[in-house]
Amino acid sequence: MSSPPPSRDDAARRTKPSFFEVMDAARADDLSAFRQLLHEYFPDIDDDKKLMRACVEEDRGAGCALHFACDTAARRVVTYILDYAPQSAVNQKARRGGETPLHRVARMCHVGRKCGDDDDEDVVTTKYPYLSLYQELLRRGADPDTLDDQKRRPVDVVVNKGFGWSMGDVRRRVEQLQEEGKVVKK
Image (tube, rainbow, N blue to C red):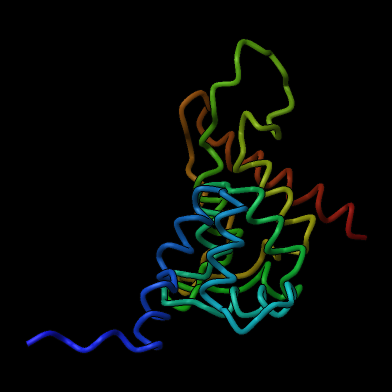
């Protein structure tokens, strides 16, 4: 006895990407795949602004696509989301833990990439993508005083020392970026 042919709904369910496939594309900073998967995940939405609203509202507890993209400094995806999402997305808290995108980036600000032998003093470059993204989120309106569920500001989750940094330098640099952001906003 053979099973009945799949219904139209079964075929649609098989072709719709999973939430995790969409988040993986966000983490990988694969903007083309991210956009395609989002359109497949939300097939009834064709307007980018509405699509980004749905995207930032889709939080299964660990955060929305913006949070996942911030985890890996996926700048193209972060920029795309913020260009089309409601302004409030930049300060959106994850359902569990209450971390904002700025918290997620702050935790990784000490991480750098080897960029050759340049002696550039400006650490807000692609050499330190998380610092650069932290600065961009501030520029886009991220609130550095927002508390997570443990009552920590983003600067409070910054590590004291990372590879190539002296004790306390990472936190001082993040605080400096916050001060520069306040001057620009006034």
